[in-house]
Image 1 (spheres, rainbow, N blue to C red):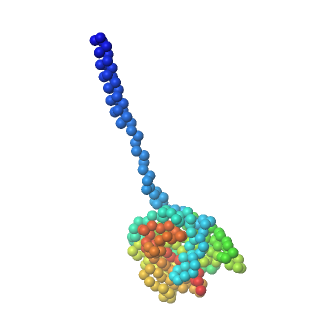
Image 2: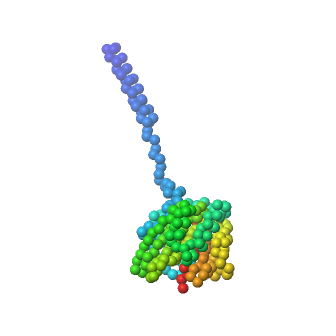
Length: 257
């Protein structure tokens, strides 16, 4: 009888120790929490491919001010994947060099003796990785659009648009790019245009703090526009964030008479 009571007592101790161990062990092996991905937008921190697709929108209707004949890039539109920029600041020397280079590109390749193939060869030589998309319809005829996948520092959204006329001749309709916002970005763009287009000796046709336009010749105009918040809102062509207010667009295009 004494042995049975001792056995029961020892058994109760064993059970108690076992339960205590299981309880402690359960807490010690609780799974680690997963890495949170909620709200993660890693695609905001890389530059989307700046190239056209087959779903190109039709040209803007004619109206006052600059004709923004830019076509939709469906891979970046309707998304939040705009190239992220820091708040506006003064451009550095490398960015000014990019601005002058791209403005000179507009000047050189808007001349009648150079064409689409010359432009793409040049863009390739400067490692900007041009891409060309073609589209045709009964109303506008054949159209070629050039975008770049590797824009120069401080610039983006290069866009050139060529049409083929009734005589099967290709002509430039629009060429532009954008320069980063900054306190002196507009003045820097004006200086770059005057340097790249020395024939612009006459006063601008329009000269305001946010928009300047010159007559290049009988067919083409050159303009610079400082984009405001309203210009960026619901833009069907390019993706933007609030940091892009003040972006400067430089363009040369056929004058609409």
